Length: 239
Image (cartoon, rainbow, N blue to C red; front, side):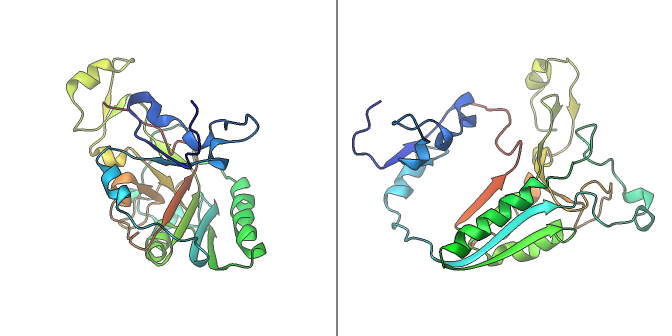
């Protein structure tokens, strides 16, 4: 479609197209990406357009604080001898394999830091990596940052894992015919942090930030939160 001189496009997707990476679509010139030509804003509901229409235009972000999370030590440093068997869980309970190392995420966060350093910006950058990239550490730090970039594993329960709130019609639609119910729907997806493979179920830090826990994160100062990981934009789309 010919958008003329349009600079900003608002998209309110429905159904399966919720999963499309709009900004990564080919641009109009055919040799680049759409995000290089237009500002693409995805809104969950048309009612949000009213708020955007009256929002004050944001200025270029040239000073602030950025938190980069990458090269996480999923095996962590928690000794099994220090974790009572009563509080152990199966690592990565939705899959057969533990979370594997992501050495490329170190390159990723370093490259982001270099971009701002080379531009001579006044952005203060802090990196969480290795065994320090724990759930509890992230909880304590995230409230202080304007931009947060998480380069780590995302997880989403398989389709045949339903929450206790799922309808029985949904259970009948599961292809295998056998659905596993797993309490709250907010526990079916999340992000992996340090020690996620330890099998520990600790009250504050089990190495997983579930969607339910993410609701309680203090992100009031965050202008932008990036989830750079597999399975961070999947799930069952319901019309």
